[in-house]
Image (cartoon, rainbow, N blue to C red; front, side, top):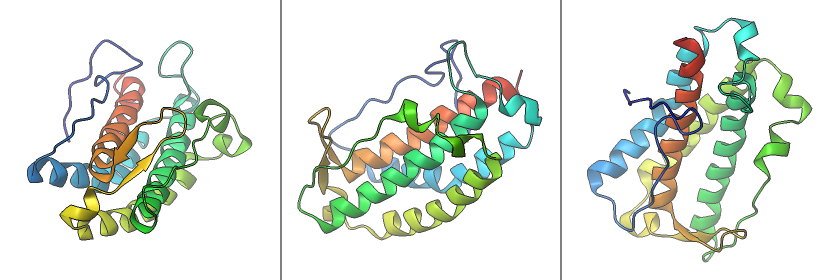
Length: 176
């Protein structure tokens, strides 16, 4: 998966912009990007030395180790949000504070732990996403902090972007 990295180290592939409608091709691309993220991220991390895992990708940013653990945490939330949207009627999800989560003791573990988690999690999540009907992809949840109603189609796009976004952060160090 190729994407252009910009000079903005905080948003190296730009910010995600949600839309109301996505084509079948876009949805297939989202699923493919989610499906391949664990492999792409693991391949990029393998290029790094352990010292680089503890290097921030930008001034004031997280270390690569924290980024990898954050992706696992965030995508776990996304999987659970998918299940809530499918099993409850437009639920309000539980938000979490990313910064404190990125500072808990488990984020100092070897990155292989979160890479293994992502591999298993994405296998389950992608199986679920591929099985969704058009009506199921339109199911929604509400974010309690923003009040935004998010469809599963939008969540798919957001997390395809999210994986690529943080993969680009790793590339800022691995391509250095």
